[in-house]
Structure formats: C-alpha cells, structure tokens
Image (cartoon, rainbow, N blue to C red; front, side):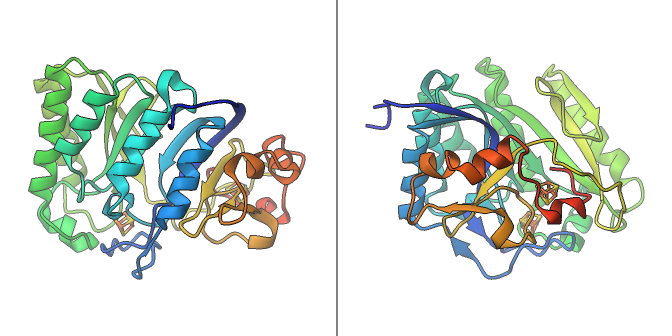
Length: 296
Ligand code: SF4
Ligand code: SF4
C-alpha cells in the first residue's frame, strides 16, 4: 500500500519528525520538557502518507525529546524505510538517539528486511565515557549496557558487510567532564572501531557524509557567534502535535515560522504552499532570523 506512489515533488530540505516532545532524562545542557507528549498515531500515519507523495533530502526522527521512547517508534521507522524504496522519498535517513532505548535486534530486523533504503547514519549522543559523568549529566540507565548495544549492532553490521548505517558516537565537551574524559572517550571508541577495521574520523563538526565518526561537540550554549542574515540550510520540523515549522529552533515565534498543520492538511500541500516555497527559496527571511546566531 505504501509503495503505491503516484506523485512525487522534490523539496530540498531536511525534515525532522518530532515523535516525542519531552524526555525522561534530565541532561543539564538540554531544554527538553520533563512532561512527555507523544505524536498521535493519526499524525504518524499522515507523515508516512506524506512520504508517498514527496521527496526531500534528509529525514530524521528528531525534536525536543528522545524519539525511541515512542511505543510506535520502530513501526514508524520501518514504514519510513519501506516507503523509500529506491530512495524515492528521501536521500538520507539519520537516526539521532541517546542509545538508552535502542533495540539493536529490532533495528537489525528492519535493515535485513529493507537493505539499501536510505538509512544512512545512527548518531549516538553518549556525552560521557564514564558512568560517573553519565549520571552527573542527568542520564538514566547504565552506560555500559548502551555501549554493549552499540558494540553488538556495529559488530553485526561489519560481519554482514553493511556499510550503512554509518555510526557516530558523540559527546558534548562541557565542564562536568572528569579529567581526561574526552581523551578516554576517543580512546574507547578508537579502539573499538579499530578492532573491527572500521574507517572513522575524529571530528569537531558534523561528520563528513561517508565517514563513521567520533564527534566531540563543543558546548555552545553560552557562546556568542556572528549573527547571520540567512540560514544556509532548509531545516523544517513536524512537531509532535502535527504543526509544521520552517525551523527546528524551539523558541521561534509561531506566527512567522509555522507553515501548516498535519491535522488539517497533507504534507504535500504544506510543503507546496507559497509560504513554504518562500522559505525554501530564501524569499522570506523572518525578523527573528536576523537576530539568530544558531547553526541551522
Ligand atoms: S537524552 Fe537527549 S533529549 Fe533527553 S534530556 Fe538528554 S539530551 Fe535531552
Ligand atoms: S531562526 Fe535561526 S535557525 Fe531558524 S531559520 Fe532563522 S536563522 Fe535559521
């Protein structure tokens, strides 16, 4: 049914899908809400249906929360991959996760059923090498068990000659780290990648497209960067309540950035609207953007 594709319009955007707003963890550097709101099944169905009519550059289940705690996450993820046969709905699918609710067995099943369908990368935001720091940050569960899940999934991937999804392990370089933690993090994951003969890169910006990576991010919350007149990317988001915004920042004014609502419109009609097109083509730059120093 999902492969019954009649019409495709290409939109050069990254589309985030906020399956969950809020998180059970309490990472001190994250603004996500402690009250959890799950995207309703009706909106999830509209998103999947939308991908049978459109094509975008990148998709990621991402927002102000941990997507994998949604009870429908793996069903949604599998349908998304299924609808992308021959990359007809998106070029790359990137999964961002803390790893806490990562189910490697379920993920392996999905990949075995739908290989080569654009599942490009899993980005594990670990943010610590030691259990001490992990708990100090505000994460729940056991870091060792998460490392084991990443390890078993990556080992399966190598043994079965799957290049994708690529793996990123990342940490934020912040002042809660124990001495040498950053070096230990790099050492831990370098040793692991090397043991499997995996090519990877150490980086401090988003990893290059074709590389596995150890990514150390700086804590930019208090940094002042140069203001920009325009975004370099089109980074849109479908919020958990179905509203669609032309920016992933969580503090943007609705009036200027909202481009539609999946409760009332299809994804195709929202992305084809004149407001959406003006954002994509940079004909419309809200005043808010002129004060923004965010990376898009
Ligand atoms: S696990 Fe991710 S979404 Fe949850 S509080 Fe930490 S950084 Fe935020
Ligand atoms: S508010 Fe900032 S991040 Fe959002 S679209 Fe404008 S410049 Fe980009």
